[in-house]
Amino acid sequence: MNIGKERRIIEVEPVTSPLPEVLPMPVPEKEPELEPAEPGS
Amino acid sequence: MEARLETGPLVSTEPVMAWRAWMLWYRRRAAEPVLLRPIVGSTRPWPPAEPARATCVRPKLHRAPFPHCTCGLYATRSEELLRRTRNPAVVGTVALWGRVIEHELGYRAEYAYPQRLQLVCYLCFFTWGVHGTHPTVAVQPARGQLTPLCPEHLDLSARYGFPTQRWMPADEVEGALLAAYRVDLLRR
Image (cartoon, rainbow over all chains, first blue to last red; front, side):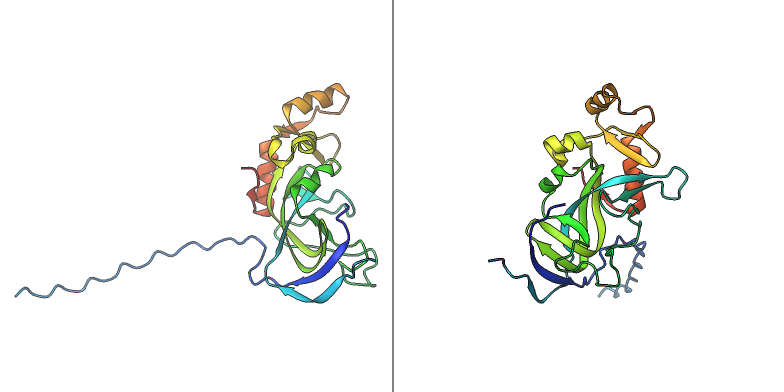
């Protein structure tokens, strides 16, 4: 394949993987416990 | 006067995104029956779920890709440049990383992995590009080969003696390919 003349060299060190990832199943958050209501005045 | 190749310490943390075409490799009884195979050079299919890695015919001489050599995993800046590719079966985007040598029209890379893929009827692709091709069957003209074709070019191929007796639905082949590499479809 003709891709033309060389221009420059790049060293690519990816921070995130370019490979596909299997995402973990999301863990449902716990329902926050309700604080007891203050007795009415 | 030729421009000098810039060899400064250009470092990037983002993979280079580019375009590439492949043939299809088919082995009915294999764990992954449909894989990507380079059109030129090595006949080994790209491994699923791990990077393709470039090697040079002279592996002890230098690391691939090397300046002023021809080694490396090739990709182009645009899909238009792939339309002259000889009989492509799959077109898609790839992520390139490691050492990447940038050329005027594309790249030679050390590592690559597909990002989005689609099957193409090579005759439609040559005429109308990646968004003008919708193959409906993948014909098996010989053992280990699959050639996607649209209905019009399937009929034309049969009339010109191309072996079309053995075939599979293109969407099944495409689905198996996407599942093998765990990537999404390119076609909108």
